[in-house]
Amino acid sequence: DIQMTQSPSSLSAFVGDRVSLSCRASQSIGGFLNWYQQKPGEAPKLLIFDGSRLQSGVPLRFSGSGYGTDFTLTISSLQPEDFATYFCQQSYNSPTTFGQGTKVEFK
Amino acid sequence: QVQLQESGPGLVKPSETLSLTCTVSGGSISSDYWNWIRQAPGKGLEWIGYIYDRGYPNYFPSLKSRLTVSLDTSKNQFSLKLTSVDAADTAVYYCARGLRGGGVFDSWGQGILVTVSS
Image 1 (tube, chains in turn cyan, red):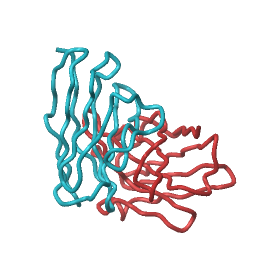
Image 2 (spheres, rainbow over the protein chains, first blue to last red):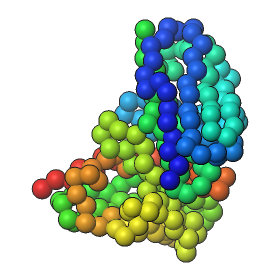
Image 3 (cartoon, each protein chain N blue to C red):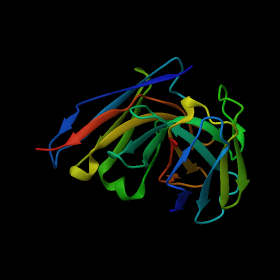
């Protein structure tokens, strides 16, 4: 199985900050990388698919980049509703696997 | 906008069978990939398996011997059965639609907590 490693496991930031979250795959996955946001008590929400494609309805402050083994989710200006846990997921092959998550908290 | 809703018992005894159903509304279940994903308390996400059309399930390898995912197109539902459960199967279970070959989960149910305990 492909292992997905996210860093950092948590970070603290202010509203308005630019934040970048990292995700690394144990082998090349091309561009088959997706990002999800999860708030406490809620289901995950798809933000980015295929590495950099913004899901319909997701604010433009979210962007994804990367290819191969290294990927980044960037939030250009953190908003109060963005404090949540973010998961990456590879859809390159089966079984699909997720990273352990990065929790974004208030500083 | 497709919507999904999980249903089933919230408590299952060890060694028994966990059975859940996902009801899909706002779209047909006769296409796309229909997935089960779980999240143990305080942990990350684990994909369990999917069904694509009636004859094409795909399961997480370590669960394959205990798992059945099936589709009921007449009711627009799909189901999960996990046999011989133990405490490690305690989790919130989500159903989700998979697009783009099944691996992009664009619509999710709200999740149902299933506790394995005597």
